[in-house]
Length: 415
Image: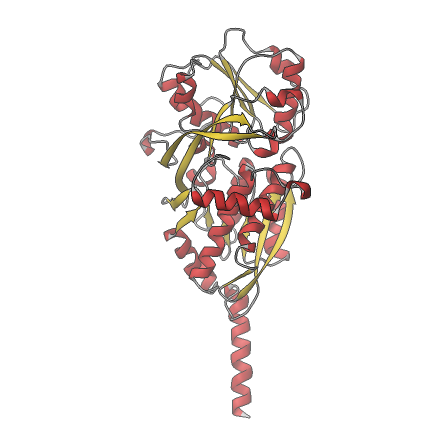
C-alpha cells in the first residue's frame, strides 16, 4: 500500500512539474508553435517558410532526444496585431512549449514584446528581419538565429558604386524591415560617396504604384527596390508597363525565389540585378548543396516547391534547426521555466548550410551575407549567383554601438 501511494505520488509530482516547467518527462511530446505569414503579400514566402521549418524536423525523423515533436501551425497576414493574436493562441490555448516565428519585421517586434509577458516560454524567430526586434529593449526569452535586414545588405552599397551607380532612388514598403534594409545599403553607399535624393515609402500590400513611378528622377542611375512577394510583382509589372528602364538593385526579399518565379515579362529584366542577403542560390558549399537537394526532394516544383529554397524557407529552417538542436542538447528537458534550454541556446554555435552562426549579447545572430546577381539557367529559371561573401556581420554594421542609430524613414540620410 505504501509502495502504491509512493508510486502515485511520484507520477503526480512528475505531471505537476511537467505542467509548470514544460515537456521534460521521458517520451512526453514537445509542442512547437510555428507562426508564418500565410495571408497577404507574403503568403507564398510564408508557405515556403513552413516548408523550411518542417524540413528541419524531417531531418530528425520527427523526434528529438526520444521525444516526439508536434508542430502546431498558425497564420498571420504581416500585421503585428494579427501575429500577436496568433501567437497568443499558440501559447495560451494550444499550450505549445516553444514558438518559432514570425515572418515579417513589425510582426517580430510585436511578438518580442508579447514574449516578455510569457517568461516561462521560449520564442525563436522565423524570418522577421527588423533591427529593433533584438537591438531595442530585447526580450530575454526571444532568440534570432538569422541575421537581420540591415546585416543582409552589407556589401551591396559598395557593389552598387563599383557598378557605377552613384545616385539611387529608394522604393520600399513603409515599415520596420525595409527601414533596416535601406539603412544597411545606405550606410555603406553614402560613406562611399553615393547619393539618395528620393525615398518613396509605399504601403505594405499596395496595388497601385503609378504615383511612385512618376516620382522617379530621370537622373538617377538605379532604383533600390525593397518590396517583397506580391508587392514586388505588382511594382515590376507596372514599371514595365510605364516604360521604365532603370536598373534595379534588389532588397533581400525582392530577389527571393517566391518573386523570381512569378510569370511576367518584367521577370526577365531582373537578370543582372544586384542584391544581398543571407543566402545565394548558387553557393557552392557542400552543406548548402545538400540542403538544396533535400529541399528539392521533399518539396518538388510539381508539389508547390521552388526550383531552389527561398530566403524564407532557409531562414525558417535555420531557426527551427536551432530550436531542435537546443532541445537535443538538453535532452528535451524544459523544466524550471526552460532556463536550462535558454542557456543552451544562448551559448550555441549553430551549424548551418552557409556556415556557423553565433549569438551576441542580445541573442541576435552574427553571420554571413552574400552579395548576389540574378542570372538565368538553361531551363529559364532565375537564380542568384554569388558575387561576394562577407562573414561575421554584426548588428551594428561595424559602427560603435554608442554611435549607431536604428534605421527609420529618415535614418540614414544622404540627399
